[in-house]
Length: 345
Image (cartoon, rainbow, N blue to C red; front, side, top):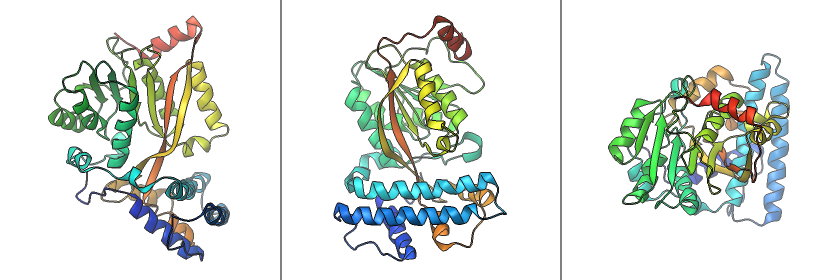
């Protein structure tokens, strides 16, 4: 975590939105976001129309390829989501406690290209912990973090001290595993490359809760989701907590429909979705590789409003809570093939 710890990201988001609406030509009311719904709807519609104009401008740039034009939608759609969130969600929900800030201090820096790391904000990790504790009792639950660069285990494990439950972490980054073990020795750490290797039989179907925040590419997301399913036990209360931004999936034709079909084929279903549950700092001090990659992927354009959207301070993801379907009947051959593909000795 960088030295400039932000306890509540809403302040930066609000400054970003106010500057954006100044550029659009309609300043946000001084009392924003404490405005009537009618005012909110008018501002929202104006923002959406502006976004369509910006995307139309981008689509008209003959020197941009299809990938670059689709990349532009990350910024416009993220802006749209942050605007809606700032009006809909109360400010305190994004306030990280002093205890959370202290426990997450000293986190190794994000490594984008090698490990595809994009750290969520401390308040996001805090909310994940709160959601999990609402449904899983430390007295007997086994929790598995499939990757933990956000250090959710460091926040969760103290609640399990002196209890029969367990907290496990799997990661490929030695720095993360060493940091977790140093902060909370009771956490069980596993270094396994799930891209190249198989899940040990001893860990398969062993956990009441599996948390993951995988890369947002369609293939990688579904691959890690399959791994999460393998770790989940058959307890009716067992859940997968998937933090995932749907924007890249939606760029594919019927992308999210494919996501839901994929769940159904695995005997899984969606329990709930919480939009804009997690935030991820795009500040250069927090994620230094992101802005460099952005400059390479999408050059600056002569469009002041879009250029401002390009500086959006946070990315976001939704929280998808997934469970096994009731009386799920998966063909034996599909189940056998699934185990052969993902689980080893």
